[in-house]
Amino acid sequence: MKNFIVFCFARTGSYRLIDVLNHQDDVIAYGEIFKPNSFEVSQDILEQINYEKSNFLKRDKAPIHFYKKLARLHEDKKFGFKIFPNHNDRVLKYLAKHEDIIKIFLVRNPVQTYISEKVARASDQWVVKEGFKRRNSEVTVKFDVESFSQHLRYRIAWYSYIKSLSTLSGSKIHTIDYFDSLDDDYLNNFFNSIGT
Image 1 (cartoon, one colour):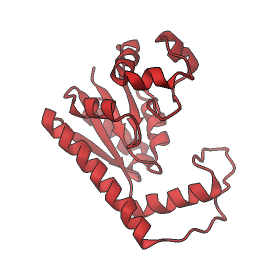
Image 2 (cartoon, one colour):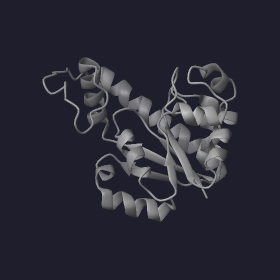
Image 3 (spheres, helix red, strand yellow):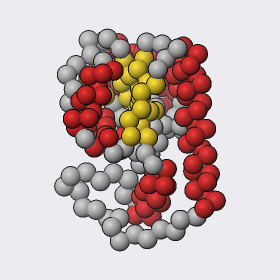
């Protein structure tokens, strides 16, 4: 079974996509397993692969080893997770070049990600789930052309970088737009088409 990786930025709907993936048959999807100073992996799973929740250095010194141990734990499933630009570059390069891993780009209109990120920073509310009280509805933010331009250039450069690494292995990149990710029928058809 092919494993997968979701390449994305904040404010693109990645938590929802991971949740939807976890509702697919034979799929195990994690959040940010290489998030700096954190694991988005439960303690019981970490214990099964001999890691402690606080031992980021062990993971970061041998990120490919950590990835392989987690993948082996789920070898009877399609296993994957999401990765952001500020995560471990060694494992990012390894996975982007790996021909047997399905690569998914989760994208969103850059104006929307820019505004959404500014609102999240101003309100200190990064995730809004059903049943959570929204704190950011009264927040006003300023659109700054220069900072937006940097925001846009960074995204273009990172996705281009991943594409160039993936091309080396002949891997195809599959793209999901934020608004398509809100449509369960679209996602189910998408997952069936790429074999997750």
